[in-house]
Length: 265
Ligand SMILES: [Zn+2]
Image 1 (tube, rainbow, N blue to C red):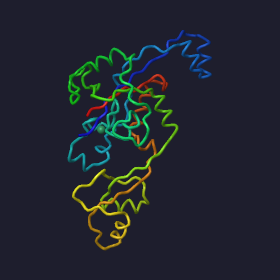
Image 2: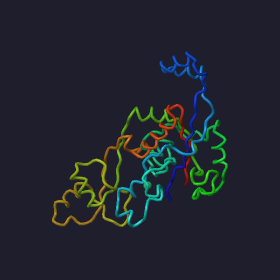
Image 3: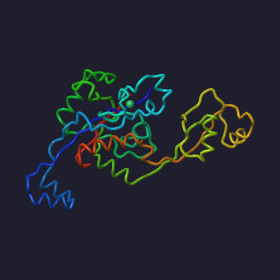
Image 4: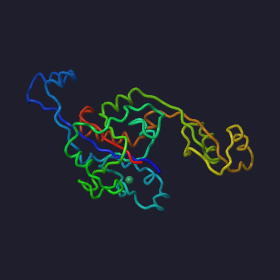
């Protein structure tokens, strides 16, 4: 079975004395240490809804045939926007956030467990022992996800942006079908249209043999292993950055927002 992420966002604000010139000066200089002293952070608060961001379940929105077969997108009801947290299954991202399911990139941090200073609202969510398959009966209904069961951690949005800012890329490999390989060659390589980690019961040939067969009138059906380079941002996925943007819109400052998450199975 697969692994899914369960995520919540907390935000905080600096306490400030209105009109304090020293605070304004520290803000102007972006002197974080002075700000921490003069206007320390207040307590974390759970965000029950984010500013609307594009639904991550692209398959439902980009593939009319798929939608015709499976109905409207269950994530957004076909509206195309959501106000909940990120929930897409993307193992490269899980690897970056917590070293879960993928080691293609080093994790930003190994799982830190739940934050000690979490909000009472979040504690209420995590104390709820309902099955994570159905969040409808959770403390906030279906607006807020219930917990998964392993690798709990949290990351400041600032930590994530720092990591992404340093860039990175990695080599991926996957098996592609004869049809996909033909398109992949024609496109000059890169990320294939679709691929899988293993193939059962089908003929597997190397790239040289694949190229030879593609030149035949009937190339036949087979699989071959291809490699491509993925960029960090692309591998983490556009949907995650759409979500982060909504978080930043709500919090204003990447140090004023954190993602708290764990995983199931
Ligand atoms: Zn949707």
